Length: 291
Ligand SMILES: C[S@@+](CC[C@H](N)C(=O)[O-])C[C@H]1O[C@@H](n2cnc3c(N)ncnc32)[C@H](O)[C@@H]1O
Image 1: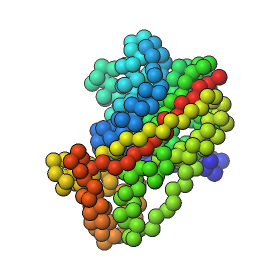
Image 2: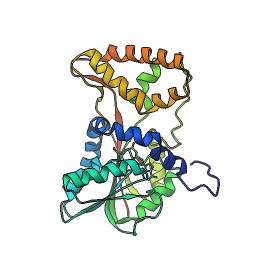
Image 3: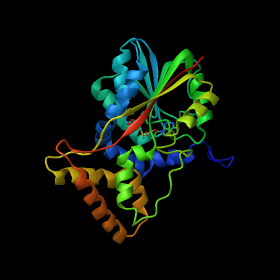
Image 4: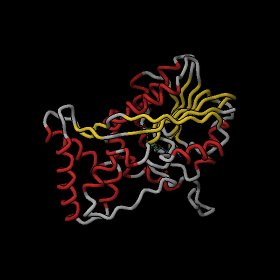
């Protein structure tokens, strides 16, 4: 858990982060990211098994792709609420809902705060939206209260960095250029729930029962294109705009940035294949229930 000064609201750093330049970059790359993360979301969706008529909360829904899938599954007799702290991503979600004619309520709120009436939902779902809480056990305890008795939780979160080459490969390519800070898997961030013991501990503390973790792995398409060069260009665009490399290189000199581009491009070109530039990606599909 993050130590927080008493007058700083929980998740203040993440609220700033997802509403600042990062939120805008995610918005710019939203279609790209939706396509790349769709398969992982589908694995969690299958485990969630939403039924017609159910009330669902999509936690950290971003621009809403999974909320729309959930809305189609629960139908007109059900309801879907997407909650997120990022105003720009929610803006896109609302536009898309109107364009698709889908009835999803999007709410700008911190999912870890008591924003919803107790026993509102049959299902809490998330694709990569639950790894950013300062105090995950407290956050999940609040979320659990919003479930009806016997209600379900299902989410996707990344497994350890070593199994996720979309993260590891570019970092390894610039190991000689930039000092790497080890990932702290207990701090908010993409790998905050990579340790299975930590997930079990957090969910047990939050009062969930029947916690199960299923590993799921499928290639992550870093780049697409007609040629290897085009694939590497596509991948470079993303690696340098969203995610950990972009963050790491922000504070480095132009010279280091230029060398890093060269090194990463060389590493990416090497692995581009006939079907695209694909790298390893592995998640946990986590399911649990409220008593
Ligand atoms: C990695 S993105 C995933 C977005 C979306 N689920 C998707 O798959 O495209 C993480 C999302 O979680 C949101 N988020 C982070 N902390 C949150 C919190 N405390 N409450 C609600 N949303 C949060 C971020 O704003 C961001 O949209």
